[in-house]
Amino acid sequence: IIEGFPAAVARTWESFLADQIQLIAVVFLVAILISITAAVVAMTMASRKIPVQIPRKVVGRGRIREGQKSFVPLRINSAGVMPIIFAQSFIVVPGTVAQFAGQTGGILDMISDIFQPGTVYYICYALLIIFFTYFYTAIIFNPVDLSENLKKQGAFIPGVKPGARTAEYIDRVLTRVTLPGSAYLAFIALVPFWIFAFFNIQTFFFGGTALLIVVGVGLDTVQQAQQHLLLRHYDGFMKKGRVKMRGRSQYS
Image (cartoon, rainbow, N blue to C red):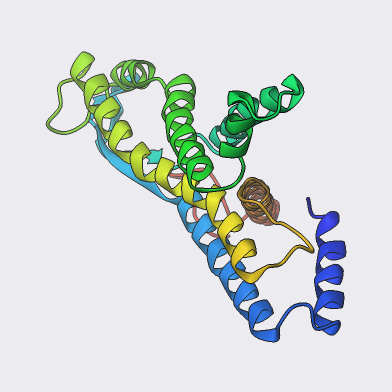
């Protein structure tokens, strides 16, 4: 994805120099792409936090672990980029079958025309993305398992009984959270079609799938770098002897 981006930018610049693309179109395109990228970053990190209470507990040798308040994050986009990939795989089937059939003027030819980029294509594409978002989220996220893990740890959601009621509550919240997440994925998948068609730019196409992959990989890289820096910072404190066992001494 990143490898082909410089060449696409170069082709766009050549088209601009040849007066095939107007300056205002390039400026608006760059501004829109930056805005969409920022929105993708925000939505990728967005989550619904379910409060969790961990009660006070007596551990070995009479030690008491104080109660804690925590939360379980439910990401708005738990499914990632997979719903768009599934939708792309299904949306091309009718047109591909019609083209391989080789008939002209019949119903298959009409189906091939319908499933070209247009109103019907966009509606079907969006509905498939929404469907596969719920489908894939249900596969990768099991509220029953999460409820059982909370119960084993003695944690509970305030106002909700542990067990089946907790699983039902998590499933209800996840269903509500997935709706804006699926709409967001449909928008990200469709908006590049509209942008490049509106500005009539044919030199390159930066789809929603590529954008989601690049942003996801970038965020994972940043998180790993932060963890690595934090670990090195912690090791530095340990080597200097500034962090010692609790109860003996603090800073040397």
